[in-house]
Image 1 (cartoon, rainbow, N blue to C red):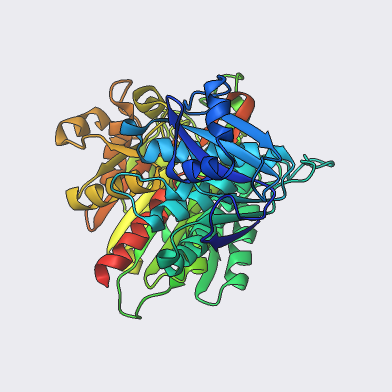
Image 2 (cartoon, one colour):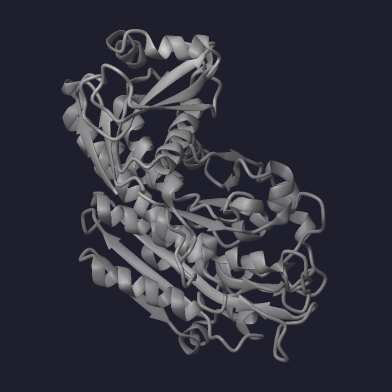
Length: 498
């Protein structure tokens, strides 16, 4: 897919399709008004005839419009103009991308970036358009012998903007494509089945990234080295599987040598059966998505390298399967973590926190500025927030604030939950330092409380993506979240540093 910049009147541009916005009720955007005047009221006439009203999600495709050089005009509903916001803009762009790709036009020019979006600049509009368009064109067909093909798919999209912003938009297109590439990598990995995407496969994908980018150094720790270090919590999860666990480290050196890095820790359970505390059979296939935290770390690091961000970033991925083999951990087992703290395993399906806690302790070696872990950690987060927002908990309010702001800008939102000390007592154990679960109440919070016991020496945030990492139903598949949030967070840090 190729993206370019244009500054041309809609009626004079020669292309397979132009995209214009329409607000409720039947109000043409400025670009649409200019086109309508040249076409002698073509669009106004269609709207008066009731062809569309301008509601969000509506489209109207017009072939061979009079007075224009384009082959098609796609009108896209934008909702009420006074309520038009970044959310409606993103929806309009997504609707347009899907409709144009199905229209038979191989190239198009979009005038949606001309729309006024409160508190969003031209860079944001152009960058978002690239990200959203690429996301709409993604197909989860990597394992199909016959790929899902669209006849005459969209191959080139030009974004029309004022000529004074060409340089800004050119940069936005490059950044948007970098972020989109990171999201796509995370989606591809998340959509792969557990018999393909094993811990060893994740390690190989990380090594491939290391070969692709000069500023990225990759290393993979095997189980013997983990055992020698004392990673008893992580290894307790991999015991039931014949697939050996891997601890994958990726070091991106975009900043100065002495700059403390941002460390991203991604949960990489490539298939989660629940272990001895086995899950119900219904929808267990979706537990291949339990490595989406790891996938998001790889995707974010790909985006960092593509954008060449001037910042140091480290990715740490504990990767394993969780299966009920003869040597698997049992409820009631007690293990010793890398930190030296002992953990009573009351439920083997609360395995994500066990692999993360050792990875979080391991992060101390990097002398991090901040650490952010990303995990499909709790079903309780899905109950609390649904599929719209990730759960965010942190031991540092400024870090949480920055992540929330990045999520809002990226359209990849999170919502902060409390991390109060009162919740910690739910993890009490008679036989170990603490247990790995805290009961039904506040499950997302007590999971974060567990992790917080391994992060006392640095600023840390936990992002629970259990509700946002994949979609169910007819659009079933990985989303690539929270790659947009994380990349925007890193971009904001670079901007703040100057």
